[in-house]
Image 1 (spheres, one colour):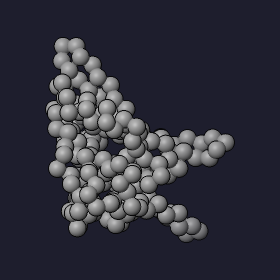
Image 2 (cartoon, helix red, strand yellow; image 1 turned 90 degrees about the vertical axis):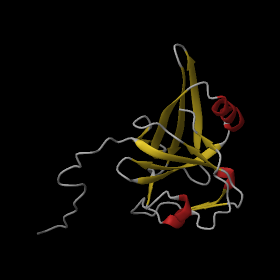
Image 3 (cartoon, rainbow, N blue to C red; image 1 turned 45 degrees about the vertical axis):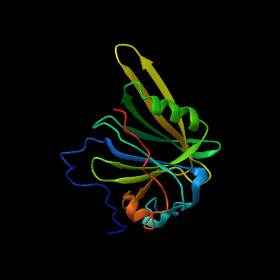
Image 4 (cartoon, helix red, strand yellow; image 1 turned 90 degrees about the horizontal axis):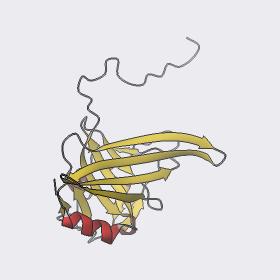
Length: 183
């Protein structure tokens, strides 16, 4: 054989590939100590790829089954290659706490840790380029909030071996007891 064979993907895709997110954590970039940048050949990171300041708050969004998705596109321009990522999910109810959280955090940027239905774990954002939050509320026959995080970056979303907070932050000098569970 004249070249090297590179195989990507599975010969038979999994019958269960719903593609939704099951877990989502947001950390303000101002609370980060470091975030590893991807290597030249890989966007896979070790568990130690992110460090936060002691006492940092990690916001956990309790998302309804089969509602949260993210998409990522790559585009090339005169400025180079950019990856645009969007993550969105709905929350039902009046959600006063969510509205207050949006008001308080609307101008902040975030690193997002997420897991999908297949168990893949991801890290979205970087130390100097975190995701921005956007929000839409509709009050008609029912109250509905649409929360989204958007990011444009020079590399795709990175893979992590786990988003288990006990593994990523083994010393647990932070508080992630505040959550947004309004659905």
